[in-house]
Image (cartoon, rainbow, N blue to C red; front, side):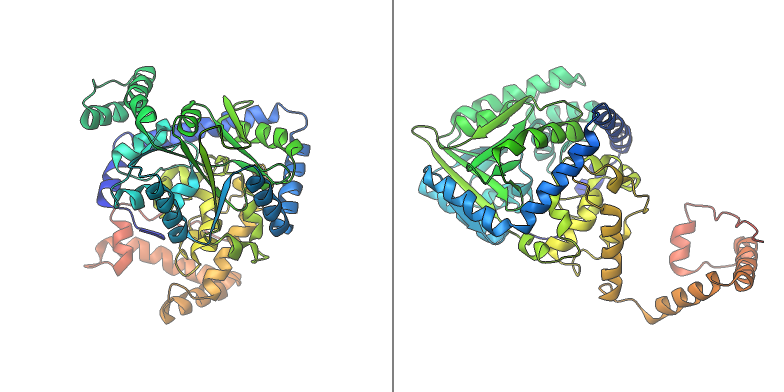
Length: 449
């Protein structure tokens, strides 16, 4: 499977019940808490500017820094694989697994692995990959995609998770957070011991030293990368930073924006394979080079994947992550997905936005998200990706004329008011308008001077 997908019936059913309430409440709480932790830092504005400039430098010199990074890794015995797309990345990983005759793997959190649909690819070939991050473990059991890039089970309440553990694992139904965590820990402990392959993502790759920086809070990544004899780290090519001295800045920002912590609980700096083990680094392009060459939109590659733009997005809080059709939801997905998959595939996303500007105002890398979204809208319209009908074009042209002239607009609104007044008495309703009005009342338009 690859590319954007529509929601399955199973996914839709799991979004009912307590899920929407959990999504709104949790994302609102996270956004407020995370921003409060950030604003306690007097140097926060300077940090944002510095991080933005470092990432801009990385994107301007990505070819040089990538070459430096690869040379440093290989000089320490790390095997580096460059994959141009999801298919190549998956096949290269499969070749490594076959080389070691492995059938069982454990995986720490990795957005790249979600992007290339690694679990599904391996599962079709008889290889089981267990998610070990608590949120990822939950959504894997549910058979759905993560709904958020930092908190994958954001949409589920503790009550729903307890029922899921009862149905899928045969465990006692509980809504207690600590007990649910203990159940997951008990279920996964044996997997760490039995697994032959360990997967992880990479938060930052240091070009200067060939260091992999991996952040986590649960300890599962430490076990996933040290217990198996083979560690495969997957990394998007844009996740580089130039120097080791840059790490403290990004660690401080990522934790505060992502989870509201001053630092993540565990930070792993992997410099070389441990004795008796093998370390592979899979550098994944999968559309990033195309985005890098797009001067209007390359800025989106500065993203640290903290997820705060999603928590602050009023649209995301109402519709959830699945509604965006692919791996990256919220403002990030609106801009990034059309770059990675093509605007022809993801043309609808730029219109899933209220243009409130909250995302760009708080982005730690100072990505101008709201204006990037507007540019994606313009591109979708210019390319006519959705095959706009002539009638639609005429309607919008007429509206533009009417909205630009006070007298024409007053006349238009008069007929709108008349239409609303007499609509209940009409023997029929019009097309899509009927579907909209079945569950809503048309508001009375205000009078205009």
